[in-house]
Image 1 (cartoon, rainbow, N blue to C red):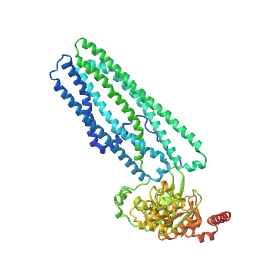
Image 2: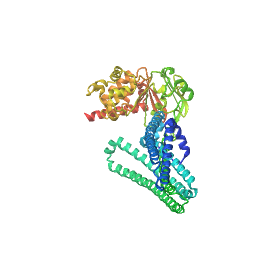
Image 3: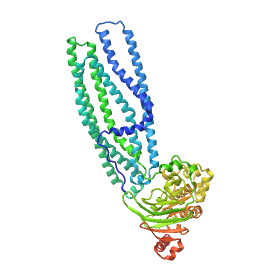
Image 4: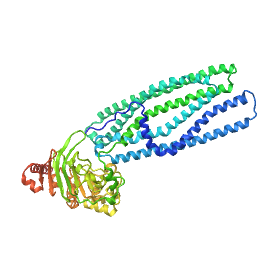
Length: 608
């Protein structure tokens, strides 16, 4: 199935997007208000200092008077001290917001990933999700905490400078600031270019993250197929594209700021030229000229900072779009309001209202097709009694896993309904059904930690004795006790320190520890050795007793004791019955079983 690639998103600065993002930032309103107040104070003092310089020049320097200088110096030192306090408050609050916002959005993203349906993971690459949860969130929290802070400072500074300058000489102010309109025109042009360039950088960066993930997880396949050189060429192509796109983005950003500085220098030159004439004509004081020159020099620093923040804001918008697209993706499988009110949701269950599962499962005229339009089932009907073990066999793509996934509500029928204990399972919560499921996959996944931790993952409140009992039921206890640390032995990342068979046994024990009412074995014996298969077969005969169970089998020897065997072909039940019944029919199952049996005997002879 084709994996999802980068979404096509807005090609201009989207204020609607930032308003939408504000609801995630609003919880930090107290810190944001304090930060805004501090920034106004910082900017106000930055505006005040050149004015104090003007006062000193006109009152003390020009007239050669020292009367009141001590008092002035004291006021000046107090202002500088107050500014130092403001800067400390700025750093503390901005740093707090950056850290906490990053944590808050990552928590929301992780929560949403827990809620999303299987279909999302079917179509979305792991690397792309990792990019959203790491670099994108970091970029966004940084621009909100520090970028918007700089923007507030710059705006207050610009208005402050303009106000003081207009108060003293409006004509010289207009001359000095005549370069501002060209700045806005240039800013509009660069806004579009920078945003497009940074969006492309983020898109390629996500692809590279995905390449890293596939390279690491597929290392063995790469080596066995001798794909190292080809993979390196592909990776070099991606990184080359990233480099050229990043250079293009950097060039636009680098051009923008010098242009701002050049125009700022022109404004300063105009202030010096016309202001100097006014001083010579004695229509402007020397201190006021110095203040105007200071303001004209400093005025374009906030303009430059505003331009820089705008570029960063455009960069961060690409990250914001990607993050919100994930957080606001609605799961395909969800509980309605009435169900949540009665039974709770997956993260806040109301277990006291959950009915006990008997295990009767019925498919009533069920049709299902994937998002790509592929129809797998059509008007499918099946009744399974509580405690019955049903095995499904058939060709790859026949619909076996789809039937089981629908029964587990990993997907939902596009038509028809599925009943559990006579009730449409959509009228019960997803958490209720999942809490009663035990699922053992063909390729078991173990988490970093000890064997004990992995078995307990199936039921966190399980005691050590219950964990040991579950492992004994699947004949895993002996091999565990032969390890160096017993149940405290570390399994390594993905269970890499254990064999495939050992991982499968622990996976089976983990499912049993949860004490599920419905059990699923999905090709659980297809990739293990004969001895481990024997152990799992023994566990199947004992553990599945009394539980409604689905067994998808590649090795037919593991399902001969099943209550019912369904032969599935093109989404339909071709044959059904127990092993003896189907063998007597001498149909599809008979041919499949005898061919496989003959093949196994042939392999045994060749090995001997």
